[in-house]
Amino acid sequence: MKLKKLAGLSVVVAMIFAAGCGAATSNVKAKKVVEEASLGYSEAGTPPPVEYTKAAPGTSKRLPRSYENAPPLIPHTIEGLVPITLKHNACLDCHLPSVAKSVGATPIPPTHFKDFFKANKEKVKNLGDVKIHMGKNDIAPQRYNCVQCHVPQANAKPLVKNTFQAEFRNPESKHKSTLDKQLNEGVR
Image 1 (tube, rainbow, N blue to C red):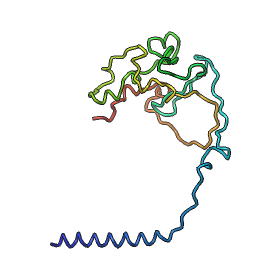
Image 2: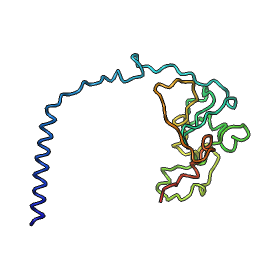
Image 3: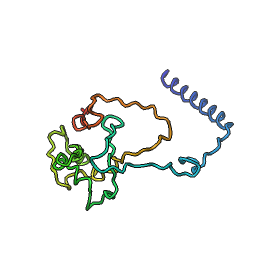
Image 4: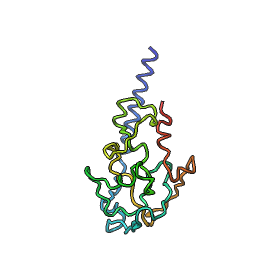
């Protein structure tokens, strides 16, 4: 009986509180709306010019990754290499693991050969157990369009001050992905 009275009392208190809050907010004036056109980079709404690298593949310095396992920047021009289509991906000509070492390119990591959407239906325990094929059609569909994650290095002035300081558990992670070894980290 006491429990019912207590529950009823809490409902009444909640109703009074809600009514009081509604009355208080009805006196608040609406703030000025920010026009969508003013949300761009500048008054003209266009970003400042960016100078992308013109370096040929294998001739420029690679920048460190922005954070551990971040997609690396492309250290060479991509002129003539894009767009990537279903029938042609010029990145694979140099970056397939079977070719990369002989041309001095960074090989595509093992994670790019595993279709994780398909893997969710099966229970994948270890990426090391995955057989990696070197054919173009064996790249995971989600990873085929390289420029959806990797962008060319550019000489661009930051638009806002950046105070982010990346922390790398392993110093090698600044230039090499360790995601294939950490893929199931924290997963039960």
